[in-house]
Length: 593
Image 1: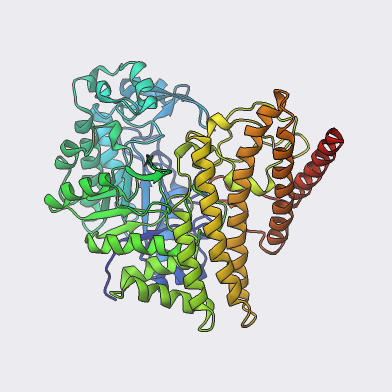
Image 2: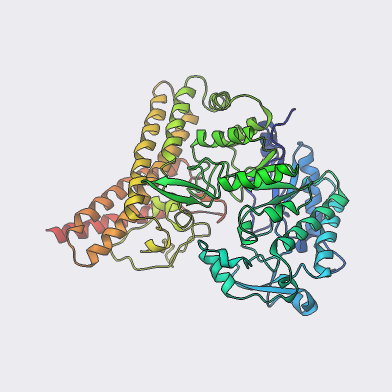
C-alpha cells in the first residue's frame, strides 16, 4: 500500500495517560480496534513513557522496571501482527519533586527549581540538569537500552518545553526581556535562574543537545526508528520561529509543528489569537509555516500535530461533526507536502468519520470531496449520504463562529453545560479546570458558581454574538440531517442527529450560563428588571436539560472526558438540574406576584 502520510499516528481512546498506560496497553487496544485503524489507513499508535519508570542506565541504576518493560515488549509484538507500529511520547529528562529520595543519592545533578501549582501534580520540582555528564549519559543510555530491548518500536516523539519540568530551561525564558504577551513566562522569569552550569549556555543549545542525545541513543539501537522533535511551546526556549534551535538539530530528526497554534481568527471584527488545537480555525498558522520552511530547507522530514475527532473546544463527545474543516486541514497538509501527522493528544482518537477521513488521506490520492463522499456512504448508506454531507458543511461553517479563547476551552463549562446547575444563590468560586475530574459536594452534585473572570476573556457582547451565530447556523445543519430521516429508518443517522443535537444544546447552554451570571450580578444589586432575563434563561435551560437527558439515555457515552478519564454526566445530574431550575422559577414567580 502506497502511503501519502507516514507516520500516521493515532491513540486508543481507552488508554489512560495518567494511569497504567503501558501495563494495560494490550487490553486497551483490542484486536477490533487495531484492525479498524489499520484498515482505515493508520500505521501507528502512541503511548506515554517516562524513561526512569521503564528502563535502567549506568548513571542511575535504581531506575527501570522489568515488568513494565516486558509489558511494552509484548505490546509491540502484539501490534506488529496487525501492521501497527508503536511510538512513545517522551518528555525528558523528567524532573522530580524536591522530597524524592533520588536527590539524596544524586544531589550533583539537581538543576533549576520550578513550583507547579493548581493540578494533581502540584509541588516544587527540580530539573535533572542536562549540563551534567550523568544526565547526558542517562538520556543516551536509556534510549539506547529501550530500543535495544524493545527492538520493534517505531520511534519516539518528544516535547522539550512542557508543563512537566524537565531540563533547566523548561520553565525559564532566558529571553524574557522580549516577552510581552506571555504573563506566565514573565512570572517564571521573575523567579530567577539558579543553575550555574546552564546559565552559561543558551536555552536552544540545551534543548538541541537533549534531542541529539535521544536521537543518537535511539538510532544506535535501531537505525530505522523515528525520532520526532515536537516544537510545542518552543517559544519558551527561543523567539519564533526558533531558527537557532531548528538549525542545530540532527538532519535525520523529524520536525513536528502544531498546525493551528500561533494562528488567529476574527470575532466581531477584532483579531484574536489561536493558541490551542482548533477545528473552528483551519490553519496552517503562520508559526507552523515558518518552522516547516526552516526544517525543509535543511532537508528534514516534517509532521503536523492535529486534533482529529475532538478538541478542547468541546471534548466530551465522540467527535465534533465539523467534518469539512478537518478534511480541509489534511488537504492543505498534502499540498504543503507534509510527511506525516500525529492525529491526537490524550483525547480525539475515537473511531469516527474523522478517523476514516484521516486514514484515507494517508493512503489515497483522491480529492477531499471524493474522500468525504466515500466516508459518508460507508457510514450512512446511499440514500442518506447527501443530506449528511450537506449537514456537515453547515456544521463546519457554523463552527467557525466558535468563540475561541484558551481560558474558555480549558476552564469554561461547555463540556458539561447541559447538566450545569444554575442557582440564584450562586457564590463566587475559583476556576474549574474542565480537563480534570469535576468538583462535587458531599451529595455528589456539581460544585459550581460565578467564576466568569476565569474563563471569559473576550467581551461579553462578542461572546454572545459568536455563540448566537454558531447556534443559528448549527441548527440549519441539524435540520438537514433530520430531513434525511424522513426517507427511511437509519440507526446510524439517528445517532448522528443525536450527536449534532447534543452539541447544539451544549452551545445554547454555554451561552445561557454566561448570560445567567451576568444578569444575576445585576439582580443581586437590586435591579429587579433582571428577573425577566433570568427567567428566560432558566426556562430555556429547563427545555435544554430535558432534551439533553433524553439524548443521554440513548447515548450514555456522551459526556465522557478522556483526559479526565471520567464521564462528566450522569442521570442524577440531569434530575438535580431540572429540579433546581423548577424551584428557582417558582421562587421568581412568587417575587413577580
